[in-house]
Image 1 (spheres, rainbow over the protein chains, first blue to last red):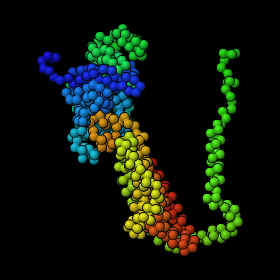
Image 2 (image 1 turned 45 degrees about the vertical axis):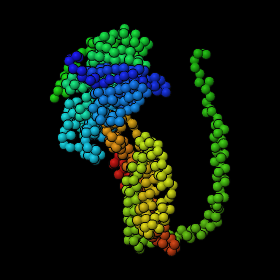
Image 3 (image 1 turned 90 degrees about the horizontal axis):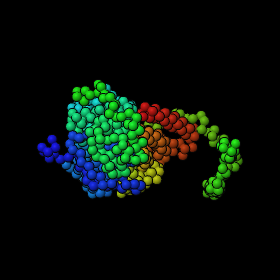
Image 4 (image 1 turned 90 degrees about the vertical axis):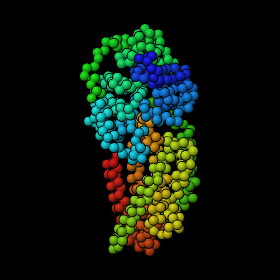
Length: 283
Length: 265
């Protein structure tokens, strides 16, 4: 698979650097994510996970370095590509706080995923065709919340809102999904639910997924590869299975307690697999 | 004993007011004294002339409603002026307000736009009405134009302040899908500010009804014209009738608009 054809990587980051007034947020980050991978991004608070993801989507310009997604330049030496919107249309971004528009119906929040493709005159009149609405409803059905379609997003629970955000990625037909702490604000049940959906989008639709996580046990359970950041530097990049409490303790020093407290109590690999969640996306 | 924290170490009296507060009060009273002369304050004249006042007040009663049809018609015209002045102002305040918002527009757009809106706001409706009468002649249309310009300035500022207070995260959520700037505003910003915008617009409509009722004094149509005539003709019984009609109408409109606000938000 690796050697048969030189498919370009989904994400390629070279020598990325960013300094905020208070700290060095990203320090010479190099990272390549192959198409179809599901990669966990772990690290303590302030380690640069969010900053890195926001650079990949072109929300923030770096000081130095280069990012390409799907073989197209996102930013180079501190300037964001002029055609960034075309690229963002192919990148699904999932936020910790869901970032839905509270007062719009759930289905409209999902239809926002089509804005790049809908002609501007129609999107500015907020008019969507029947087939577009059908697509949005199908996406909502795929994440299991189609019955809330016409409710305001604010009326949904956190887990349901995050699933609506995933439905938006589905109608976007995103090739790459960047998820920034998607489960940090959710209860354990919703968290598993959302991770399961991300894993399915990766498996069944071939989406490349980069998901930043606070808890290492989710990284080990759902992602084969883990990238660990510490103070803006990549300090580990390899199989998640090779992450041991010892290694993590070495990598993170005093922060290890915060990161792996849960894992030290109950080894992640013993968490039972969810039953009955799998067919959600298959429909 | 010594290890127990004691409340006795903290004074029960609030700390004394600083010199700043004393100074501020002093300045405030100085300003009041200084303004006394300029404002020609003669409170004792109220007592001295109280008999005259009583005679004057008696002339207002009973109110003379013989011409109530005309008063009512003119009151309706006043409301029409307020409606059109407000609606045109809302239409203009939306783009002007968005362009005055720091978090949407670049500094070279929002600074000039804000100064322009300041100018619209700084000049009273009555002044605008007198100017527009020269341009379009006596009558309600001059009143509409006057309200339009002034209200645009007020609403644009209020709209911009609402936009500056939004949660930026949903806007970023929209931006993440590849939406353009106008789509970001329409899908991310407007839904968040709409309740406030509706509330401000209704409030301005209420105050425009009040403003429109005096615009007639300079000749810009509506009940103000009648009011001006009866006061100038010393017809105080009729003046009382007109004032009562204004009070009742304005109160009704305030009540209705409060209802609409509750329902819309």
